[in-house]
Length: 95
Image 1 (cartoon, rainbow, N blue to C red):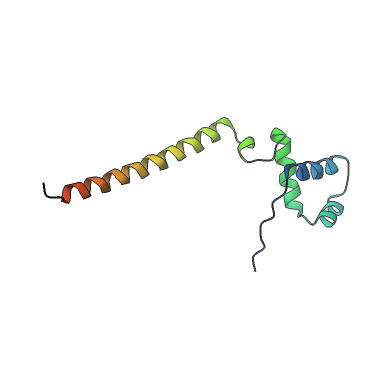
Image 2 (image 1 turned 60 degrees about the horizontal axis):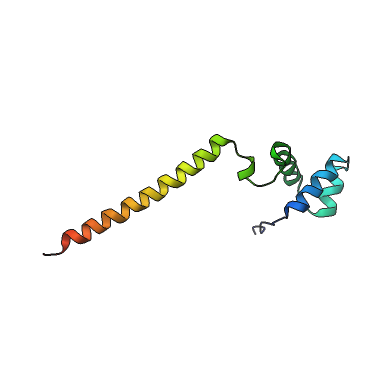
């Protein structure tokens, strides 16, 4: 059975990272708060990069630009498909 993804607030994540910085053992934190070591390590890495936990805040400018371009390409392809369908429909009508 698959576990449901838990969602944690940024404040909670920051508290966990601060506990680790203060010297608390990883095993104590994971037992007390019911989170995995991997989760804590990920939060520590994210916070070290930008001081934030969101994916968008931790991306480089190139990654952000790449994401925006992919979104635009997807939108343009959708528009193109709509126009193709409209042209087919209009082409079938007898004038």
